[in-house]
Image (cartoon, rainbow, N blue to C red; front, side, top):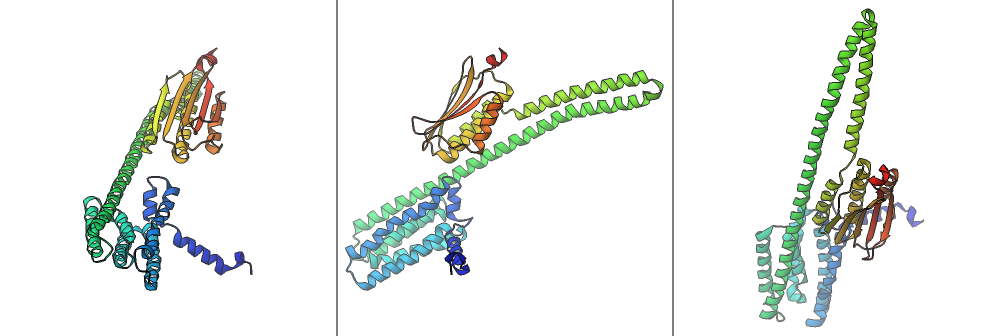
Length: 392
């Protein structure tokens, strides 16, 4: 039977993938919210390289006996299961997995003369508790390790102190790492709240403007329509005048509504520059802007603003850049907005976002140009005709 058509084979593969896939509330998923998601998924796996010491220790520093080798390999199998569940399983049981790894590490020290599992447990403790409590639990773990290590013939007092100190430093780095994650999360929540309040304020303003504009017009139309209906039989000329007034009011109101809608659709470039700075600096990307504020039509300014938003979003999500330079220059013929980053290189591939940028610029008689930057990143050039050229 073909393997692909074998239901047992398919279900077994899906079961393996489900076991290895991170849970929505896993430690990996939580940390990924503050950084590179794909990189964070591989981070725990890369750290497994430190297990080489666990494999080599019995061969180098102990009498090679079969039972030592078998106990070491069995402990590695148990550790891998606990380690996988600690990182990719539910955080609800993270404390249990961390304690199990710590106990396994302390139990293997007299046999294997390696404290690798203790290091892994110490690096997980800061994600089980916060601040000083985490440091206290790490200190207790290292005291237990020191007591067990001194019962062996291999660990000298100086070596035990060095192992404990290096493990403590790793744990402190993890404490700082968790603090940065929580700080970034609070910053994102603050930014989301600012955006939510800005949207709410804008909706309230739009509601007031529309109420003042349309409410007044409709009230006037209703009054004049009622008056025209009453004059239809006794004063046809007066009724005709009222109908003419209704037509004039409706046309004037239509013009005002169109102007209001145009204002709503036009994003301000200065506001997008401020948002871009907040977004990039929150992602530890330096933002630099240079240039004057040339005269632009509302439509051209909206095209620039939306294009800047799309370019900055692409940099933050995909480029892995550390710096973004935005320049706004204008001459007699064209006004150009240039966004340059020092990311991983190459001109960007045109997708739906870039296609939308190009369409908005072309509607204003402009163009979109993508180039590879000399620094290895990408340059996005957005151009529209200058206002002086259009006036001429």
